[in-house]
Image (cartoon, rainbow, N blue to C red; front, top):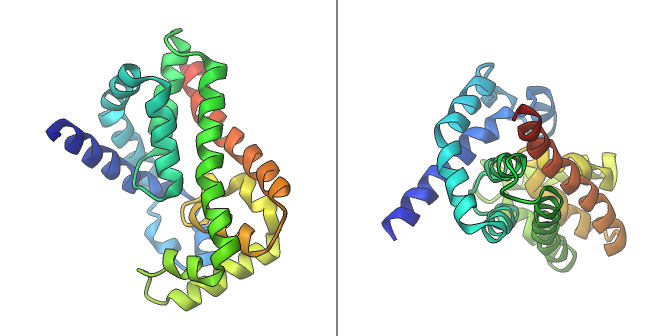
Length: 210
């Protein structure tokens, strides 16, 4: 139990730091929080990854595809886990032949899509209440709700392709897709494409570095 608790704290801390990577201009335009993205964010993220990568790597090596799926699924339904570290670990293991690259990609995409699908269905059935729940800790939840809806209305379901790379956008896009009443097939198509790009980006990088 103590080891699991330490692992959770490590991953939660890494996830919080990793959220600072995203472009200042996009966040400022959509949510007015561009100021929190410091110019040294990338170097901070790199230090966090180097510090905790070995721990996550050992965790994935020990538990295999199950923990890869569980970590990514939990991240996409809202738990503070750093999906990129799980993907980097899977990429490193695939590069050394200890994990199948194709199998890991399938598992990762399935986890991301299923997690997002839960939020899509929630948005489709509960509407604004889901969006308000996501923004409940912000200074002005109503304003953030309106900005999020305006962003989705402007760009449409194509946002699902890039949402995983953008903090804040990754949380609101699936329920917004459900609220917009786009078909499930269309949602799964765009979200699956985005999940594939997200999963491949981190793992391919690790494989090429090996």
